[in-house]
Image (cartoon, rainbow, N blue to C red; front, side):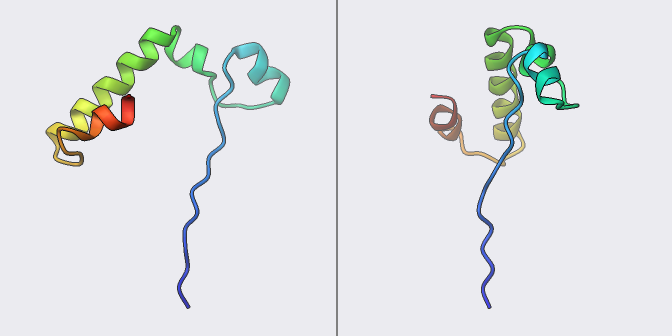
Length: 66
């Protein structure tokens, strides 16, 4: 029997207030990164590390980040 893994995820709340209202113990995006720019910077840094460690090709981050 072939088993497939279908991707799924549970998004982080955008704000602390939303997180508290949902009862989600995980920090919200706002709590994690502060601003949209900080989030984008963190994604770019993670992509650069993945390229440096050869987990991604040099062109891949452009497709992932947009």
